[in-house]
Amino acid sequence: MASSLALLGATYSQPFTAGHGFTATQSGACDSSYTDASDATNGNPAASISSTCTGRNDSPTTTWHKTLTWESMGVTAGNIVTQVDCAFDHAIITRSHSSAPGRGPCQIFDSANTSACTASDLEALSSYSSGTGGTSWATDNATGAVAVNGSCSASSTSVTVRVAIRPTTGNNASANTQVNVDNLVLTITEFTPSGKKSQVIIALLPERTP
Image 1 (tube, rainbow, N blue to C red):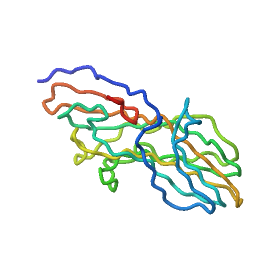
Image 2: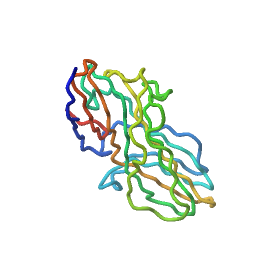
Image 3: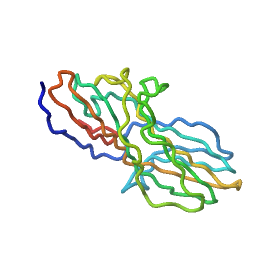
């Protein structure tokens, strides 16, 4: 029988700085403008991804996503991924008129970005309290580790990491809302099929440059 070993960890310490590799897909529309961008000014502490909407009572959703293998996120080649946990920082940067924007969900999808690779979302869609003005940076990490589907569990599998932003606007034609996300962290649980060891890998995306 294999002996029980202590869990091991590794941490990637990169936020959404230049060259992070995430791209944005928009769902819904804004009356005047709808912009997704890397924000080099605002972040926690600096640089992040942002989605901005201008228009009356608009509630679009931007999903920021990147496809990569588990191994490029730190999983040992040949191991099996069993669970993933997600955490990310977020803030309202601009909110000119009263509204309740949202952030999330955080998800893992397949390489085609069409089907979920986990039993449920890693973090759910959450809304800010209705109001005006910005918010301080905070962290979403309410959900624990979520099981990974068998079809996505091999270390060599390419998966799509996703985090969404909903820059909901208020009841005015010029209403403007900007929501930013930074420091996306995945905690990945893996095991070796031989049963000789287990690991926990903590990965902050985008992945560390070799």
